[in-house]
Image (cartoon, rainbow, N blue to C red):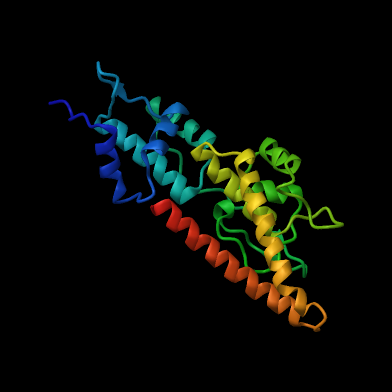
Length: 232
């Protein structure tokens, strides 16, 4: 007996329990990338068989658990489509990242769990840990979204964070042009912080503490407002 066909809305309901952040636009994006090929009803609506749902579940799991880019996921699916077993879920170890005090801190898988100590990374280490492609990094640098620490050839924690975010946002169709909007917002907020701490600049040690506290408060307010706007 053939498996029942489901609409994209029904598929979304099935996946929500395991992937609460899944959306119809994300499913459609994966289809546009050639990772999914659901049938089309005469009316034009997508119809998903159980095999399509299993395939989608696999894609979402390796994205969530292994932080694999779409190019690698596509290669895995090609192996599976040819009758092979899914490639091992184990990832090769990432080279250690040197910190500013010359100690070595092992980088976590996929670069997602960033060490708390200050980072001092070469360009090659940045690409390896973040999983970003050379071409995307070049574009981020062209847009002045990522750059080495002032006066050095080393990249820090902020550069790594932006690279990881940029790679993960690719799955949602977002690129450096969209991140420029985030940068513009950050520049305005940084201006607010500078104004707030101006009275503390002449007090030794007080300026850095005030800057840290005001920055944290602004970030919390920004995140809360973002959630409020999205939930409307």
